[in-house]
Amino acid sequence: MARDGVRIVVQNVSLLNGAVLYVMGGRALRGATATVSDEGGPVELSVCDVESLNGVLLLTGTFPAGSVLTVTDSLLVAARPTPLVYLPGSQPSPYAPVLVLSGLRLVRSVLVVSDVALVTVVTGGRTVVVDGAVLELVGGGVAVDAAVFGGEYAFYASARVVASGGAVLRVSGSQVYAAHGLVFDSWGGDQRVRRRS
Image (spheres, rainbow, N blue to C red):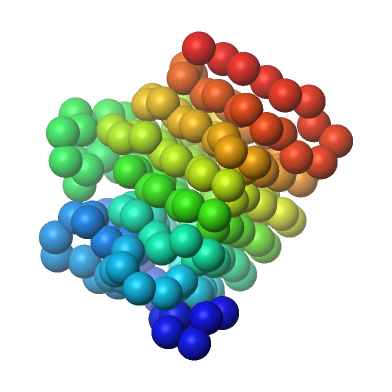
């Protein structure tokens, strides 16, 4: 990491009964729990040892080029619907998300989700939700390794999701699903290029 970079560690967190842990890049929402700026050097952000029951981990905002965001060694469980009322402009929905990516922009950066159990026991629930804004992965990558996805879908998108400019989305032992607007211009590994308008 560059000398002027920032290292942030969030660990040993318990989220209960609708509690939301916001992890925000610059120009994100106000009232952040953990906030980083999109100016200056890259950010190394580690979120680990999070236990959640009917809580939500929310990643949002713009992170500086060269940043590395990791979510590891966590158990996120939803046993009842949690409406997305904490996202600006979102209508209450009967989802049961445990991980939400909203307006997340990673430029030449990497997002890694590893050894994380994402479990939804609500019928029709969505475990991972991208809602209300564009998720941009520009010249970076998303690595999803050794993850356990519960619920109906591993990945639910109600907005446009774009991975382009050499971005890599790697999924190991899981499925990726989007309702609409999922576009991969460059697919890494052994996976084929997929386009969906």
